[in-house]
Image 1 (cartoon, rainbow, N blue to C red):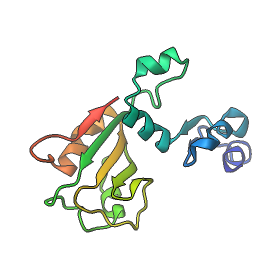
Image 2: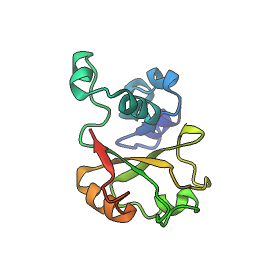
Image 3: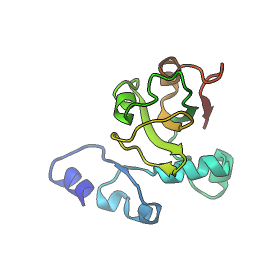
Length: 151
């Protein structure tokens, strides 16, 4: 409803909706004022299941976000973000990068600015390709390597 109001009443040119509940994906379409629907749970599921762009094309679906990369990094003890709230990390993310999930002992969770990050948490981002270098510089190499990346 908010998307439709933004589009019709406030003249917003492009409405991007974040879908937290995959069962509700069918609602987020142009008839409700949504130009682009982003489903972090679906992106993570596709990442975990190893769904490729070719498989998506065979099913008649588009890749989750053309032009965006999924990057992940495991927080190590030397990370400046360990022991602090997620908001400390998200406040320093480079332009073109969004935190989409944190994977830890409780499973996959959507971002929560108040949650404390701990050693071993895997942080998952959507990033424009040109933002991957600054993201790596911010997070630092984990165990001597760069954050993992995949399409």
